Image 1 (cartoon, helix red, strand yellow):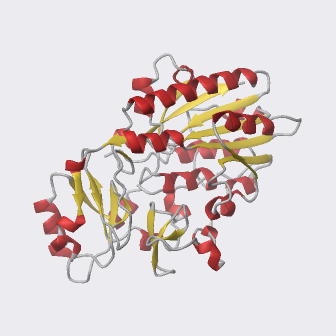
Image 2 (cartoon, rainbow, N blue to C red):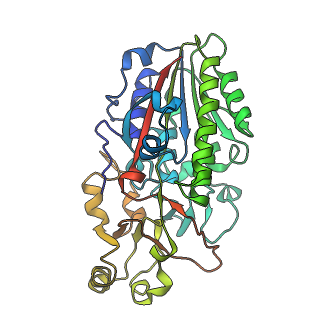
Image 3 (cartoon, rainbow, N blue to C red):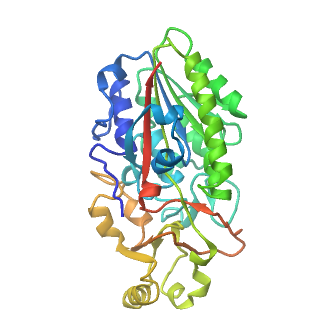
Length: 385
């Protein structure tokens, strides 16, 4: 199990470095030693490019001779769980889950009496976005967006299909949001925000590698081909930026691991285990939160250890929080509500699935959210342009 290094070696510490360089409060987190603050602070522009799903180990194994590999500074950890719904808020807010309060793709919010799919900001059972009810993700978070704290012009380069979502609107409203469609449009949008004489911070998000790795697997020809295409386009773009006094930083929210149907644990096959729970599993399929019925703790722990001990590391949620898996310092006031009583940390390439009525099954080949090296380690690439 790879624990996040919030003392200097995580994506949160990368955001602390950017915050320091842009005259913003780093919220108590140290800067990463992988970057020198001097050159970063003096750069006219800082560009943070997040390639969703691009793990450190993938880059080391498949990036030989690539532009990204040639500029690699080292590896960092993601947050726990190693998932988009927890890591993207860390990039937007500059703090880990313990402070921003989003604990996984499916998070239970006691104040709503509901389990939400966090990024679409809708109930897990598939209703319309809660934004139609006048609610905002910021109501469940309480953290100030990092854009708001920076002494620079801020921009967010987002795919057109999520640029105007409730989640992005809540945390990007202090930045100029530029939607894009396709790879060429992506780099055109970034370049347009780095022109002029004023200082700029640009956050650019690319989700396609993640989508391909989910569908075909992270070791697939499709994933490798996409990486090579993106890398070539990025190298060409970096040449166009030469002389712009831009510090370009490239990282990811998490890595990937491949799984298989025979290593997928279905809760429907374990009714005695399901009977111990008052809510469906939440979090991620590789790192799930369990809310226990009163008086069922012994039955629950015995079942997991005896029937599923080969594929599950059972951990107390409160102990993992005390050990610093979710962050350092004072937690969000409702964070304990959002991580249940116990956590199922999946071993090897196993995952566990629990569905609510009417929920569409997601049969991803590539998965993430767990605490393996493949999922937890992400690259830090840096170039001065």
